[in-house]
Length: 289
Image (tube, rainbow, N blue to C red; front, side):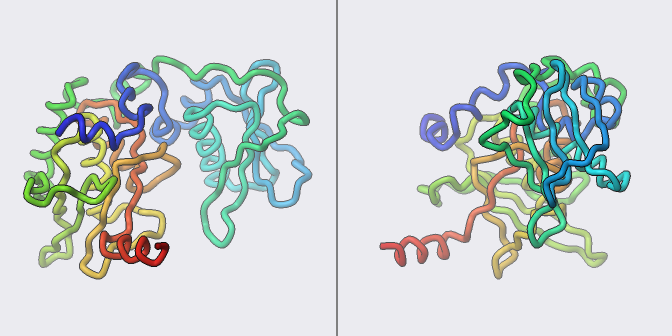
């Protein structure tokens, strides 16, 4: 079963644990902004960007990261802009990144232009390799030190039972084979006070680290963290895939990553993809045929 599960996980995802201290995208949202800027050796300046609509850009000046901000941004907009650009840079360094308001939405979109010749001033600096000391005594430091993935898994299940009054179980083996890419089925029950109690069923043949990250995301999803506008199906169920991208802002992915870190694991990519309900996906495939 382990070998079958590995076929569902991207190569990059299987090697997430090779350097626990390596900076990751969620760090851009978890660290204090001043600490993040110092760690990345980045500075921010307000400047007329010229191009209509562009809110900010990140480029390299004399070997140093420089965030160029359109004048007039609020303090909150400035913080989100800087964190968004540095988070994307941490995930995939580039000589130039640009940030634009999301069309028809409240968020922002980070882009990597094909031609950076008018902006780029050198090779992208390396991302810091050891950020663990930055979390010492902070809100998101591991409360009992760094633990093995199996220990974090057990602690996260215990936390769910004791504090969230929820349930975490493996998907029964008689339900296999599961739909391609499915990692978890998530719902929530509600008590008389309206508090959510997670109900999470995960496939049991996933590597321990991936399983922990997936559970963290699923719990955050169940308790109502922002999920980018996605809604559960008519039965209140979310179907969560095994593919994940980097954390790109507040929401279920960030909350899940920080829960996992608080219990002792450096999370990998935690923005897990939400899948269409199996019956809807099946109808779509039939229509395409």
